[in-house]
Image (cartoon, rainbow, N blue to C red; front, side, top):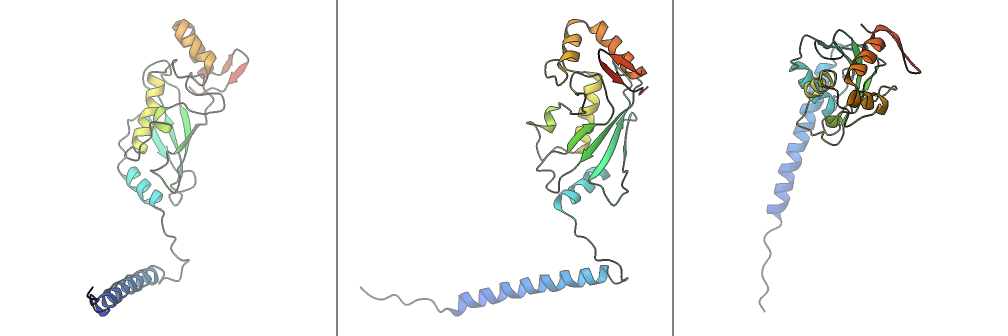
Length: 204
């Protein structure tokens, strides 16, 4: 069997040299960019995570109804934690104001934001601790969804509460069996008062 002569090694090594040179060039440019950003003598600029970059985009593209508002209690430098207030303009919860906290992961949008209701509310899909039952925050979350979608989903919970997927089972049973009593309970809770053994602060 004839021995096949191997290709000269310099072809491979020269390719590695070109790749290495490119990597070094990228590193030099990145270092120059950082030095330029820090030329004012301030603290080093913190690199943003992919989640922060995506969240910036989401917030810049928000298109919310007038009944919803977003605020940043920790300032615009901390976008990963913010609050959304919802004031339904129809349905059982008309006129109430409900505050939600959002905590966004650095790996967002590959993980749904963590959302809690800070306003104690009598609602079949929100329990008394503020946990929210919304499918797009759980099994139906997909990276193509965004903050705008979540806020509209929360708003939808107030205009069309769903007794078939409850967290507050007592409220869900009343909504299913006696909608008039459910409406009365909601108004009592929003006005500030007791529903059963639970007290609700005024939010209307």
